[in-house]
Structure formats: structure tokens, C-alpha cells
Length: 111
Image (cartoon, rainbow, N blue to C red; front, top):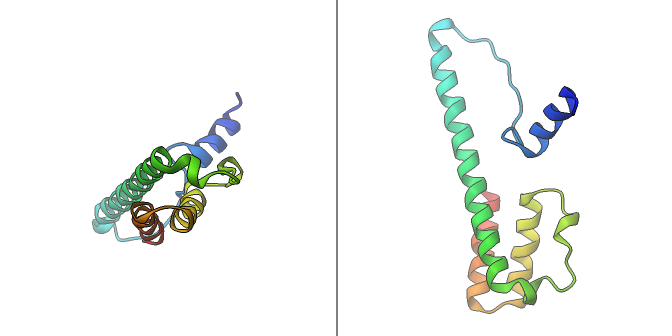
């Protein structure tokens, strides 16, 4: 596999998915503050993504057959789009617990 292909795959589906490179000019004594802030932002993003993935897995484990009769999740581009579709299906076709999971999915996706 070519180096450019590996870089592209890493940015699309690997550890750098959903992240962008930013270059800023800051005073040299504030460099560590910027690096710490960037690390905190990356951690928060990854934790949000993991919470969303956990909710999606829970919803599919409990309600897959009931909510995915005409929905092809493979055609959706990313986790955010999948979670919104699953949340809407849960709220339309599920019971009270499914509705609650759907609301949590939407709240997590919007935050």
C-alpha cells in the first residue's frame, strides 16, 4: 500500500478521523498551553465518539429487527449520520425504552 493511501485511510477512518490540522503562531511561552488544550479537545472528541458508539451498539443489540427493516446503515457516511437515523427509527417504532435511547442518541450527537 502506498504511503499516500495509508495517510488517506488514517485520516478517514483511523485515529485522525474527524480531526483537522491547525497551524497557529503563538508566543513561545504559551506553546505548552496550546498543546495541552489541543490534547484535551482530542480526548473530549474521542470520548464523545465512544459514548455515541456505545449507545448505537446498545440500540442495535436491543432493537435491530424492529427498527432496521428498510434501513441500510452501510450507505450512511459516518457514525453521526447513523446515530441520527437510528435515533429517529427508535423514537418512531420502539417502546418507551427505545424512545429514551433515541433521545439520548440525539442529545449526544448534538452536543
